[in-house]
Amino acid sequence: MRIDFLYSTDFLAMNAPELGHTCMHLLCTAGEGSFVFNERCYHIVKNDLVVMPYPNRAKNLAAAPGMEVEWFAADNKFLHSLLPSNNYSIGGSISLNQNPVIKVDDRQAEILLEDFRRLRDRLNDRHLLFYREMMGSLCLTMMYDIFELHARRDATDTHSDRTAYIVKQFLALLDTGICRTEREVRYFAERLNVSPKYLSATVKRVTGHSVSSFINRATVSILKKKLNDERLSLTQIADQMNFNTLSYFSRYCAKHLGLSPSDYRRSIQPKL
Image (cartoon, rainbow, N blue to C red; front, top):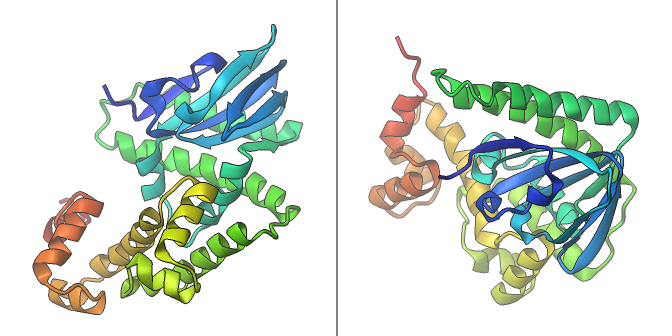
């Protein structure tokens, strides 16, 4: 069965295969341990936070006697759907892929544990009509608390190598909203004066995600805003966003929103 949310205190279970589609948020609360990620070994101690999309990529987990952790994992796509595309979460994936460990102080650790435990305490409320919305709200609070810590860490880091520069320039292009009309990898490669193959390989290596996944995520954010605007017809939206046909526009929505444009609009209408 696919796992949407899971809380645990078992460090050695963090890279279980069934968690491969999730994002892991783990805080070491006592002792020490280690793991290998992207061919680099990380040693963690009390008040080390680990944020790792697709934790099944972690290898060689080892826990010293007395090590204690708490972690919360949630479906990656679900977490992405909660945030706008031009958010710190996109650029932040660069540094997390290079180093998933963030050191926090006692007060910050206390706040994170409160976030984890609020989610833990509501895990079994699946009978509620708005269960996923409620969990999404709690996840959002946790993510913004983590973004604050992550952004502070990144403010002290410098990235001077060409690969990091190319990825940051690519993300800067996405932030302009260009995906409203341009969604081909070749377009972005030409803007950055590199080949599509180089751009794809570089983004994948630095962030762990494909170029297309970033483009689609930015596009979906724009698409939702337009679908939320009832003044725009579906034909107008398809035209403004440079979809060649209304049927292609509908297929894109079905694939990336999980609903046709009409069904999506109905889903956001107030229920009487």
